[in-house]
Structure formats: C-alpha cells, structure tokens
Image (tube, rainbow over all chains, first blue to last red; front, top):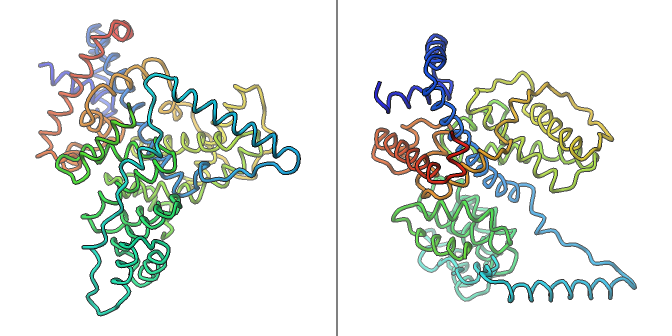
Length: 253
Length: 193
C-alpha cells in the first residue's frame, strides 16, 4: 500500500468513515503492526489539534453573533456612583487612565488601540454614485445630498424612510450603517451591515463585511473584527484584500 | 427575522453555506440564551460565565449536528439547556460551589464524550498553535475538512479552487506542512513520539 493510500485509510478510520468490517480489519492490522498503530496515534493528535483550532474559530464567529443578537458588554454604560463617593470615583478613574497611559508609552512593542486603527482606516461609504432615483421620487437624491454634505442625522432619517419602502436596498443599508458610525453610535450600525449580508446581492457583501469589521474595531472588539478581516484578506483580488491585510498587520504590531 | 423551526435549524447547521449556518446560530442565541442566562446568573455565574458556557454548548451542539448526525428526541432548547447545565455543574464543582436554584426545565442525559471538542489539552493547544504558523489558506482548508467536515466538492468552490482534486491535493500538502512543523519542534516531536 502506498503512503497516500495508507494515510487515507488511517483518516477514514479516525473519522468513522469505514464500515464495520473495514474497521475490524483495520484494527486487526493495527494490532499486528506497531508502526501503523503509532502512525494512527500521531494522525489522531493532529486531527484533534485541527478540530480544536476549528472550535476556536467557531467561537470567534459566535462572539460576533453574540454581540449582534444579545449586545455587547462594551455597549453597556456603567452608572457612576452618586453623592460623596462621586469625587473619589472620578479620582480613581483618572488615576487608572493615567496609569494605563503611562504603561502605554513605556511598554515596548505597543499595539495600536482598535479605535485608532478604526480611525486610521475608516472612509465613509461613497453614496455619490450609488444612489440614483429611477422613479422620480426625490427622496433618494435628498438622502445622497444630505449624506455627502455630512448631514448624517437628517440623511439617516431619510434613509430609514427609504428602507421602510425598500428594506433590502443595499445602498440604503450601507448608507444608514455609515450614518450611525459617523454619529458615534457604532453598535446601531451593525444590524444594517448584517442585513446586507443576508440579501442576495453578492456585489456589496464584501463592502458590508469591511464596515462590519471596522465597526467592531470602533466598539473595541478586535476579536470579532479579526475573522472578518481574515476572510477579506484571503480573497485573492478582492476589493478589500489589501485594506484588510493592512488592518490585520496594524492589529498584530 | 423569520423564526426557524427546530427542524430548519438542524438543516441550516448541516449546510455547507456559512451564511445559512449563521442564520441558525443567531436564532439559537435569540431563543435559548435568556434561559441559560437566568439559570447561570441565579447560580453564582457572571455575565462572562454565561457567554462562555453558552458558547461552549453551541460548539458542542454544532459538532454533534454536523459530525455525529445528531437526531433529537427533545427540543433544541432542552438539549442546549442540558449541555449548559452539565458544563455549569462542572465549573461549580471546580470552584467548590454547588447549585443554589435549579431551573424548572426538562433535561436529557449528556455524555462526557460530547464535551471532548471543547476540552483543552496540551497536545491540542500545541497543534493549534503550530497551525497558526501555516498560511490562512491551509488553516481554512484544514478547518473546513476536519472541523466542519465539509466534502472536497464543497470546499473547492468555497475556496475558489478549480475542482475537488485540487482541494484534495491542497489539503494533503497542508497536512504535510503541519507535520513538518511539528517535527521541527523538539517539544512537539516528543509529544508525537
């Protein structure tokens, strides 16, 4: 039996792909051949390691889903204490901030905070060319004008009205998500990017993923951003391949 | 979001399409998280404990569905609650604590073997750390094949590979690279003797 056939059989055994008779035959071979038994043990450890790695990756995906569905602790606002403890609380908070800042500047190989990586890489979605009214409805043009002139609050209201009429319009979804980002309400942007991913429109999915990843950075959730960026960076020739690669490098510096 | 039946959730989790899997996973979070949260937080658990235990339970469930072809005689909610309860009882035992309030919910027996996929040991962690040294392409294909249990004909289009034979060759090359890296490290080599 050549090496590859041997490996195939070992894997079929370990992955429960043999029928009862084949399994018994294989086990009897193993009992006679200590070298084969050793190779099976090695392969088993390798597969278990890969499975463990896969489970960790799934957990990264689940973290993203968790923050979308349940929300994130990072979004929660902790109410400061009232009364005479307030001054003490503020003093302690300031001391912690100062300590963290000092450590930040003193420690070698410091890492850019996710929010800074976000700021360095965020460019607002370009609605200029994407929105065009084909029905004579003035609202799409109005949304575009408001958005491109930086009136994000009013643009958001117009886009939400448009989404009431056309819930799966990816341009409106991306625009609304971007408005929330610009308005400093990053957690509210996420469902809009997610909705783009749930449409059948393949063209804008990577754009949505890109903004989704940036939003997680803004929310200080680099672990949620990383698998999305890795996916974009792995798409050879993809629109966001280089950008995602750059951000991943900044995250690991 | 349209509510999926238990049967549809199982079908979605068996799908080779990640978006379809994620739709089911989102529904599991929406439907089952609150009851687990209530149970764990009433029994000395923090918010992080709830998130960790629920995440582990989903990983176990996902693998059971995809690899062992899990067929349920109860609702998914009961299954997940039973797994979470078992995991939480183990954690309480490690912390030398016990259950304060039980939840009025049905449970089914969960065998310890089912928890294997989330159990960390030195060998697994070392192989996983070596795997990180391989390129993203290798990490992806090996995860698809061994963890997700996708077939080569499902992996090829997902990775932009020409056909399933190309995918098969790539997977073999990646396993060889992984093995070479393991053998380069004296510590790992010893573990693999």
